[in-house]
Length: 228
Image (cartoon, rainbow, N blue to C red; front, side):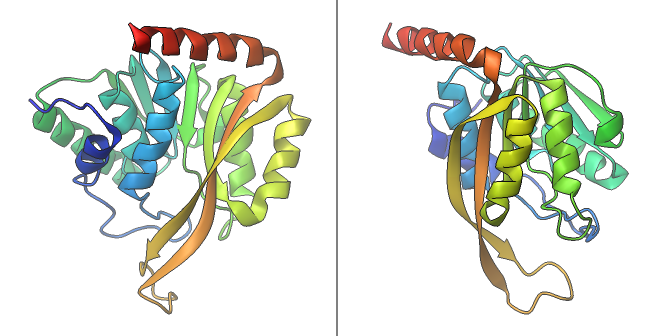
């Protein structure tokens, strides 16, 4: 059994999961970098937003965010995707990590369009389509995430920041933090002209406005537990 004591080990485990063999261009199935995923999840964990929580990974793809959350102690994860091949891959990856760590996770795999998924959860962690191939696909995911949870971690291109910020504000949420990254995108589709290009991205941590006080209390409790 592997004991996870730090972010680096989490990234190492996540780097071993399978990625798409035939990614769907319309669904913008780009793999999430394991170190970026680990950084986001570790940040969320330190805030008390992972351990013991029920989490939804919307548009889960390979399942990297949901798997990372389970490794860090999530009570249950819903893996949601409209693509059956992606969901099969997520299932394979969960089983692989379970064998790798010698433990079993509580999770549910949901083959459904995210707009039709209505299970309330504690936290949403998602890397939705950027809305490049299907206009405002990112908006659909963001609205659904805010409908399902009062605490959301959502991944978007920094170039769309004004658009994302406006939607967040209009729906009674506020930005707690934005974690920024240089996301390496390897050549995946026929129209890509370079082997790797870097995209400026961010993970928006957003909280429903009335939930800010309770969120701060959760962080304080988490810090107290770590000091003991």
